[in-house]
Image 1 (cartoon, helix red, strand yellow):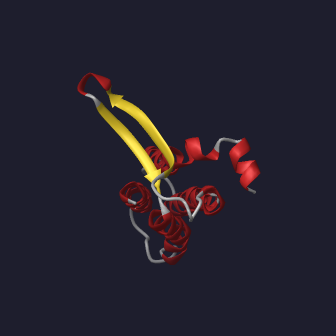
Image 2 (spheres, helix red, strand yellow; image 1 turned 135 degrees about the vertical axis):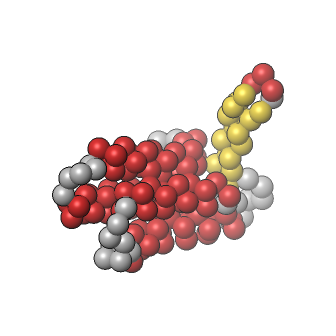
Image 3 (cartoon, rainbow, N blue to C red; image 1 turned 60 degrees about the horizontal axis):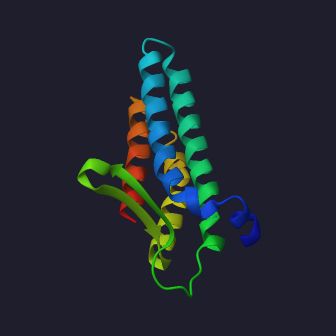
Length: 145
């Protein structure tokens, strides 16, 4: 599994992908919710739930590779990504993961599909907004870890 992950350059793109994917999903849900105003409420609820569940399951699937990618015996940050954000000011975005962050990222990404399933029948109004905010919350939590 490690050879496969190295072959696709997993360490170089996984951390930004884990942060960007939920934001794109939240933007999609926001746009879809705006577009679905005045339509069948039951179909809108089903569509927003399915979309959020698919995005969270994809996020969980992508994050599982971190288990094999991160070396627990190594010290320091792994899978680091260093990007210039505002070069004129010298501002950079630096992402990395260590052993504790690995467990927290996996815990978050594996629990979020369960959060969607747990709210499947209890959230009946403004489902697009609810699931979009849940996706934004996920980005915030993963960014902290």
